[in-house]
Image (cartoon, rainbow, N blue to C red):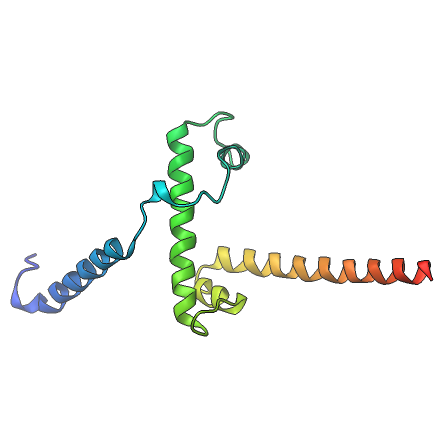
Length: 135
C-alpha cells in the first residue's frame, strides 16, 4: 500500500491538516504544565489513585503525570466548551454536548446532576422545616 500515490491525495491533505492542528495546539499553550497553578494537592491525587487500585504510595512521577493529564483534559474541554455555547461562557449543557458520544462519561454526568438536584431539594426542604420550627 502506497499512501503517497495520487489516489491518496485526500489522505495526505488530512494528515497535513492534522499536523497543522497539533502544531497550533503547541503554540497556543502559553504556560508549561510545571508553571500552571496546581488544581489538586499531591496527596489528594495519591488518594484517588489508591482508591482506583494503585499502590498506597504511588511513584511521584505517576502522580505528576496523572495530574498533568487531568489538567490538560480539563483545559481542552474548557476551551471546547467556550467555542460550543455562548461566547465567553460555559454552561452545563455545553459540557453535556461535548461528552454526549461517550456513554460512560455521559451517564456519570447525568447521575451527578440528578444527585445534585436531589441534594438541592433536600436542603431546601430541610431549611423550610428548620425555618417553620423557629417561628
